[in-house]
Image (cartoon, rainbow, N blue to C red; front, top):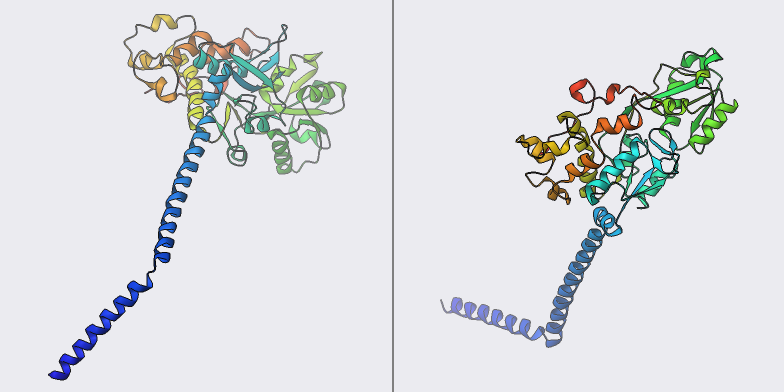
Length: 377
């Protein structure tokens, strides 16, 4: 029993000695080091937080809407060589179907469709200009593709024109099908989807041909008229628009066959969801307005409407505008200043123009077309 008590005393003595040695080992120098470490960690955390705040502030300063508002006008990347869509008029101003959708954005933001600068871009230049922020939005007969949605870092808004690639040849050439173009010299604009579509279709058909590329549309059409190439290809809408500008339109024909699907519409940079939403819903407003029978001439008559759908579209109730960072009446502004989709189409491509281009797939869904707006609510 005595031995057991001695053993317990020895055990407790060892424990006490160990504690003393541990306390002695924690010198003031070590304690200071621990405090410095904690202080450093806190400082790093603060620096990290500050850096994060700065980064968020920097991102906020990159808001496209803020940049546009501060500048006082929209910069639109467009075309100036495609009659009907984007071209120089007699007064030296760029106008067209695509340009009007840019004016709709300016109208929604500034209540002024002329608060816009159109920057003409070639097919090669357009995506670089968008990516670097040289332009706020690209509306230039640009096709929505997987690669452009991913590798190029762009977002496509609603399709404003459903198109397909076609081929123009001389009427007296005897060419009526793609197979008849075996061995032909075919002109194509560089930096466009038409290059790949042409290669894909002729590879599928096992047809040999010679591709001749051009930097811009004007040079391509000039070469075709001069006889440097046997045929040229682009979107069918582009072929129709340029046909009427040729010296002898009757001497040329557009083949019936379509080489591809070409959904065209506005394009923005990735990374700014607010701006993406703004461009989308302004475009949808033109489509919705046509479905509801609202146009630039009668829109004021709808301002006392009891229809909740119309009231939300025109900003008479709800807060859809503020959700986007716009005035509540942004839809009214768009319709009043620029018009609904049908007005835009008819103004530049419809029966009262030299193109007289049938709407086809570009009809509202209620008329058998593909145009369809999600609900404004």
